[in-house]
Image 1 (tube, rainbow, N blue to C red):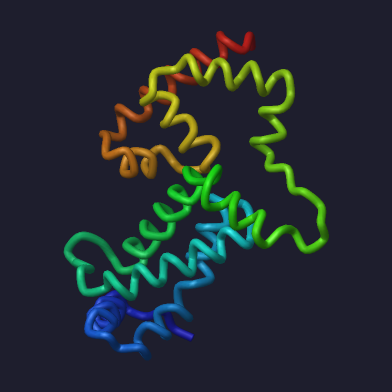
Image 2 (cartoon, rainbow, N blue to C red):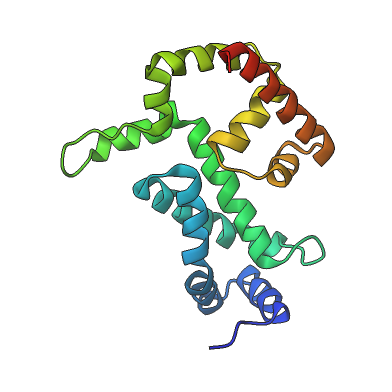
Length: 184
């Protein structure tokens, strides 16, 4: 099977913008596995990743007419939608995500402890959390996006709408501060 040409993807996005359900189904079949992987990498829970993917495709259907091929390829545009939705989901994790998790519950009844939660409960984790709280907002946000959300420096730069060099400096300074604060 050959990969679709970028011109075909742009034409498909235009068709979706005009309400073509078959084009939307084709887009979903072609891109959903990759986009699901993006959501799962960020969220680390299947149910959350599925929900974010669903919400993202609803957004794509509603906003396809606003897609501009001069700004990015369709896959890049879709990936940004999914990534931003996943990050928004995590930001609201004390609200929306937690409510849905309570609502659905785990099928086997076992509680899942996220790695970040487990780290925060440990003594070292509490110290690291205190050190993170002492960082300036821009450095703390960069560290959280890079190390807790798994974003690259370039992705953090795009997300925060800051130059790449600035983001790299923030992360470097934050890591130096954390190293000194934790005592490594």
